[in-house]
Length: 350
Image (cartoon, rainbow, N blue to C red):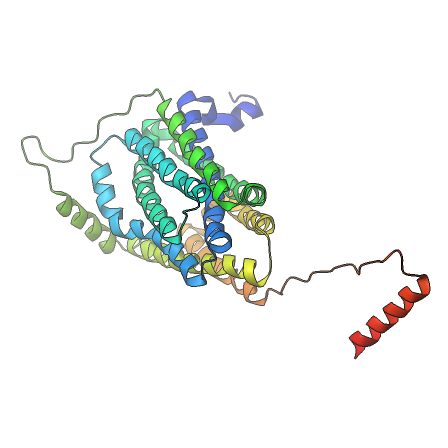
């Protein structure tokens, strides 16, 4: 017997521990979306960075995923996940808080943005690895799909709300102070993770009793061999890496182009990004239905290709047209105004 529609829609959100995990993720994701726009604006607007410097900022953010992704996965696999996630949140909050503090003190530099980006990226690697395997500790095995779906909708919803909120905050507070909201969001996330009451089981023992634990290097090699030897995983990994690489390049160029060539404000860019993110939200809501019709493989190939084609119209974006009303001098007689208008028109025609 099914419950009322509202109860069915809430589903796992009625479970206190999952609700805390979902709240932590939602707060963190909204803050991350704010920071994703605010930090490049610090480089572009406050520090007047070049296009290369802005692109390098995004590269530094993603570099830890390449450098420590495998070691982090092996290391986190030996630990309880929740303490790793809380430490990651607190570390990211502390690192991001240095940006508004340095701005207020007048000592903010592009090098500091690179250092903060790299530190935040490293902590995000550990957080993401722990987060992906923590959900089964909070919900039952038969609830994992529903839990993942709710967390994905939350993430996509944050991508819609976050950029618009970032644009408003940047316009009111300026970009460095808007980064403070991202720092506070990680503090909020850590608090809700700390409040989860369900005990987390000890890490799984993956070696025979009495035998020494396999070294990290051996485990990394085994994991890498498994991925590269798998007919599907190696291609999915290559597809994801390629999309992330060129997506980062496109985003870096797009922000500089929008600010310096199109003259767009932070608010306008935030609205544009929010509108674009509605596609991610629709995708999260319809992914299961689409993949059940097309198949998982065809769905990945189709939408990976469409994602690239969607960037092509940006090359045709026109420059912003500013329509300014002609100043009216109330003391000028009507005839003089007409004559002035005629002269201006003649000058323009000439």
